[in-house]
Image (cartoon, rainbow, N blue to C red; front, side, top):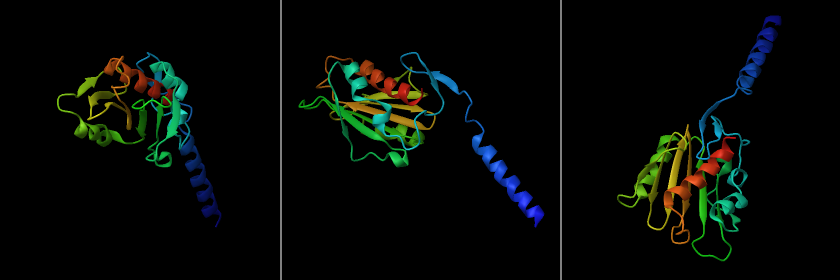
Length: 182
């Protein structure tokens, strides 16, 4: 009986130690488009929502507009698929949509390519491990993979026509990644 208790205490101690290993480790390995150093792991709490990762004020500062948040029905933060959008109140086509697939990996990275307008796909450097930008029927999309996480940002060029597609996409996705991996 005494051996069983010791074994149980030992096993419980090992599980606690195993769960704590790496909690304080520094894992900086890459940089965002703004040049800041990013960690390997998402720094937001478990079950985070997209509005925790990027705010209306941050999006507005990038595009020079006053933006408002609105929730998306497809958001599933509890299962690692948060999303949200921001828009200029009363302005049609001003929506900027943000989506993350935590642990989405290559499958999610490749999926959007199926909807790209022919010859619009372009690899983008300086974000995550790999990234591309493309056009679909009515929007421009940037998809970035960092580790197993994939982020996607889409917006409509007819409203944001004063911006270069690649530059605006990189700024939006870069800010999102910067906030996720601080």
